[in-house]
Image 1: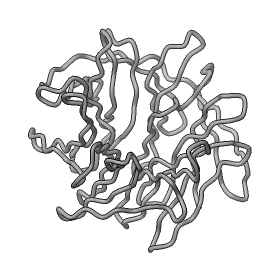
Image 2 (image 1 turned 90 degrees about the horizontal axis):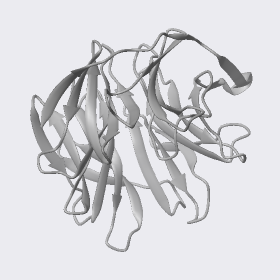
Image 3 (image 1 turned 90 degrees about the vertical axis):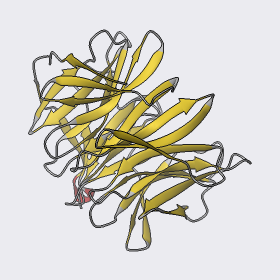
Length: 284
């Protein structure tokens, strides 16, 4: 089901950034006044122009979407929603994510200050997670208690299920339609996957007990997160040319890399020992 609502954007706020470690070119991104920028379990995204989107939590505990565009923040909420998350953005500034209304999660896209609700037909919950520059949208939906991935392209939905899995979550789509995400086997082990030209490939960080793939760019560079044990904090990684590089935000206890653009700029979330969450950008 697709419906449209008009967005009212709150006034832009001046950029407030701090460079964590200049040598590694990490930049911490915090929405002014937020208690968390980037929320546990959420995604953030970046486009070719370097515009960044994600969710933040205010002092009252409410969750809003934000856009960081050329040094200024804008905050936005789906009309009437109790929570709004922003997960992906394309080159023309279309934002995708999810919102919660009356306890139900719905996907959305946001273009020219107008929202479009994206609900997989018959699903009890839908969340949009990524968009490429062709306007193809990916995400996940829940039907009869089972989570499936989806592709929404040219007005039509396609279900994405890793063969033999009991759970498939789609997190990102590249410029040529390559799709990345996470699936669980019947024994509940979690693995990353790449869907390229209709063929699935499992991708696991070496030695990890769980791997999730979150973003992919035109060059085929993939970013994600992995766990080394069931109690460990997540660590981020970059997979480029068959080689893995771990990404750990300095001073953080957990890191997840979630988006990468053609220039190789990476965005993600980190969490600190005090329980706070932050968004970071890494340029190399």
